[in-house]
Image 1 (cartoon, rainbow, N blue to C red):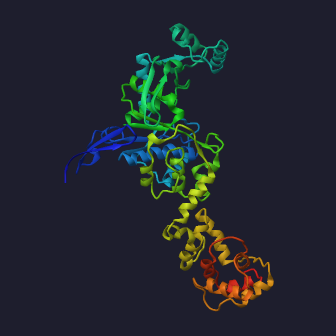
Image 2: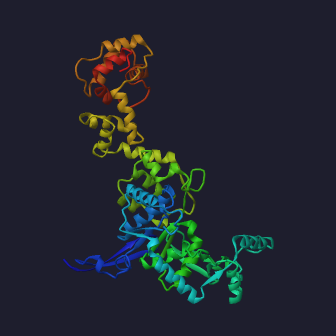
Image 3: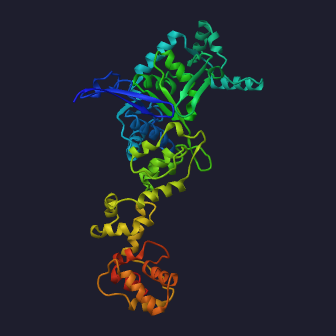
Length: 487
């Protein structure tokens, strides 16, 4: 079967994207670009972290929103490591980023390293210099700081005054003879840059209120802004979905796209995850790193649901798959208020996932806890409703297999219960028949009946349904515990 098709997909309250293609012809035969991406009508989004630390829950938000957008629009997802900071970027962090994304279920369609694209960045630099849009500046950081303080003292905005543009060639040569090396600023047009943001709606940045941004450091290396624009354009990125802390950057980057002759992508700036008390998330919060959350035993689906749905009009709830999560996420329904991440809410979502988890999904992890394979399914069904994390099952297996120090609050009651303990193998009906016999013998009922038995059998005053747990404990251990022995 061959032929042309067009699919129109809504990705916000007022936005659609048309996807064209051919049945029977591979996408690679579409319009090429440096990464072999299909025609520009196919959405391409990117997540571009710097490999300078472990990803945290706040990083998971843009990664997921981009990936889910690609799923929803039948687009592609690019993982690009923005690793131009040679001093801080490491191979270990780069590997960790890929592992953490894979744990969440994010598998990139495309992969790139920014450090391998230096020739393209250099070519863009030279083009901007030739246009007069990139100009050398020789002020030191101390000089710039003093200048900003003077401006503030006079009630002026602390923006760069473009003094370097007035330097003659002779003055520049004299400064370089002193040992100074220039940093390079991008000359902004004093215009209002406006765009329709998929999250924030009609948005704008008045570039006249901004300092000309530094794009090239004194050592010749490029800062984030220039490589990001060049790579987004040359790799065919159609939609840039990122945190609202980049809104001002968008005004600068739109001018860069235009100055370099590139098409301007669609932008979406989502709210940021914060801690429950409003503190911004950072790589130093190790307990909220994706690696830390994984090691703590949380399910990736619960982390993904909380990272993507918090701060949206959708209630945070467990999700069966990333495809289902993609159906819930609508960029146009993300709140403008900060999205507060509450670890207690993560516990609740994770518990719901575990309570609904089928045995087949938990089996291998139970076997790793040394739960015998022949009893692992009945054990899982007995305990899963009492778990927050799958790893919590290890505690209950220790309660089953022992040794447990029984709590005997009433020795006479325990002795009567022991005498009435049925002989032979226990099954699902043993608990009911035994407790009914104990009730008739002692007259105890309700909490007075069940709590002493639970404390004797498990050493605890809470836990899974004993009708399910008692057959796993078995008659031998149950009898010894009722007798006050650790077993």
